[in-house]
Image (cartoon, rainbow, N blue to C red):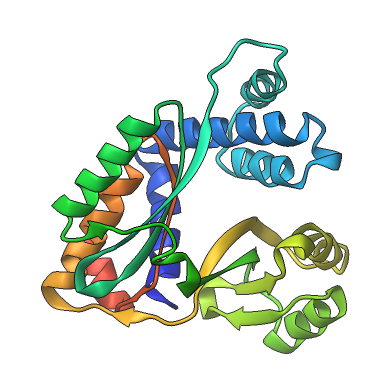
Length: 249
């Protein structure tokens, strides 16, 4: 499993069992609000909102909280006006990073992201310096159970681009961004159990980090994701699973 994928799994686990659950709720509520503002409050006609609602339910967020966030986005309830910004930069060892943010204060967020990168051994880059290293994709994670051949067959029939076997962690099905929900619905109809659907950035190439750089990289990821304005952090690092587990313990 790639370093960043492994990190995402550990992050979700910590959010479910730890004190970061409140921060997770805050980030998901922001995403629901912005999704509803941009595409309307009906998830049937708003793919981004469907993904946000799925993430909220995966985090066991109460339905009335979800509905309030939607109404804030559609203007039925008063709410903050958030702006979407993607910052580009580098981490320890030359790791490329994309930091997706939703903020009501661009200057504050830019300053905090710059400070976090600097503190963590990286630096903020210019617009376009890193984005070209990643491809935006739809990603569907499947629970373990079926064989790789079974998943591959159903994924190809559904129009997926790739299937990655993560062993005991299940499978990852990758799609073109626009095909995410159609493929997910098809896989579900075929009897496969989905655990998550999302859009993400897949690196074209990876950078292996070890030793002190690996330790700094994970601390930087935590530092950024602890920021309430930061929604997602994408990075192209690789490290051994055992090393990541020991550093994240």
